[in-house]
Image 1 (cartoon, helix red, strand yellow):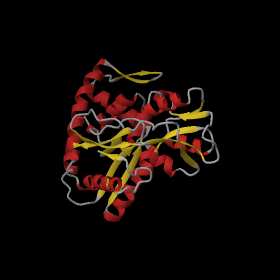
Image 2: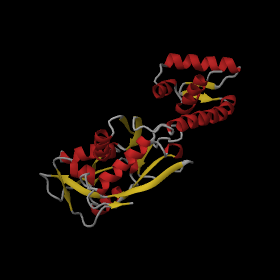
Image 3: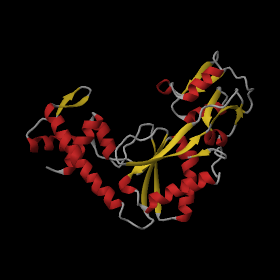
Image 4: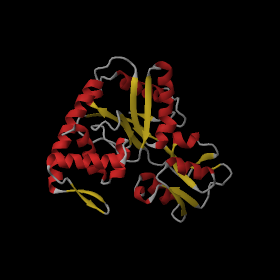
Amino acid sequence: MEWSDLRIFLAVARNGTLGAAARELGQTQPTMGRRIRALEASLGLALFQRTSEGFVLTDEGRAVLAHAEQMEAHALGIAREASGQGGALDGMLRVSSSDWFGAHVLTHAVASMRRRHPGVSVELVTDSRLVSLARREADLVFRIAPFDEPDIAQRLLLSMPYAAYVADDLPDGVPALITMDTAFGTMPDVAWLRARRSGAVVAFRSNSREAQARACALGVGIAVLPTPLGDSTPGIRRIDLGGTPPERDMWLGYHRDLRHVPRLRAFVAEVDRLLDDGVVPGLTGSRRR
């Protein structure tokens, strides 16, 4: 039995299709299919039922899954422990955040990190899903929800301010709105905006804050945006709709095994320094935690 085959088995079990699993591991679908068949042959078990919608675990596959996940956890623990032993400020740091936070906040820290520690390479992954720190999908994560995974070191970074914006060449009373898509329709800023413009039509919905800001600049309607994004977007201005939109908490987290990694500690320090010094547009005077 090859550990690499078990990694492929886990990827297929989690993604449900060879294509998605192949993209995750950077391999080809034919290779993935061959390795799954080789693993099944070595175990003498059918691990998956092949259906028109993808791969579904058999009872035997579910039993193997539990053991494979334990093996993966130990292998990742070895990797995290090895990563935590390096004392030099070099190597790659994989950071995850939302698209707008990465573009308008973290890039400032990346630039400062480059000047101070040129041996460190930062890889920024923007993803709407909650990545797993335990599986090393990222070393450091910034997000609006606290972490519930075990062995995660986390803290509340700041309360992110929001404001209402409209295109520079439009009046404050624009009758159209820009909000999050229906999957995120319960977010506080959506309810706040709808309450203040109850009769307005929602002209554009998107789960991308960047797309909302761009649509706002093009005159589509009023948008509630995080102030670092809104204040940095050309062609839009803040407006007063009566009161201030609700803030959102921003959390940072990383696996405890990486707490002594110098490059991770240095990057967190850069983020803290930039926020404390008011370098990021739109965050001057924001509440630090």
